[in-house]
Length: 103
Image (cartoon, rainbow, N blue to C red; front, side, top):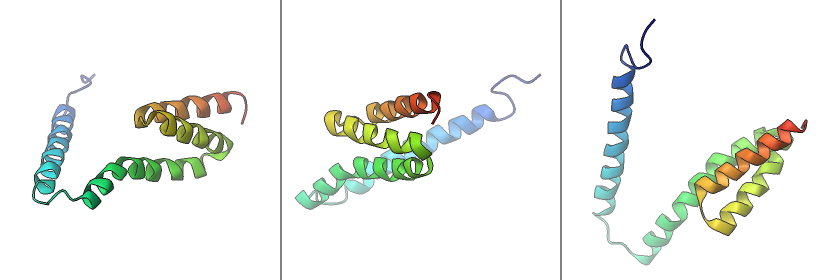
């Protein structure tokens, strides 16, 4: 039996980590080429919430009753805390609970 990280799995993980680092560094390098105007600053500040909403909305719509009930919980936690990971965790907990009770 093969080890869990044998046969190139470790190389794949290392390559993904390298690409992630390059994308982050590249993003900082590119944004450093622009004047940071108030309009650009507002756009960059809105970006995490927009990406989060674009990721969660399709899941909520396809999720049936559990997704429909979890979506407002996600929105409420996001609004109250501003923490994307905490909001995602709240949505997972609510959806799991709703599915657990039979919806």
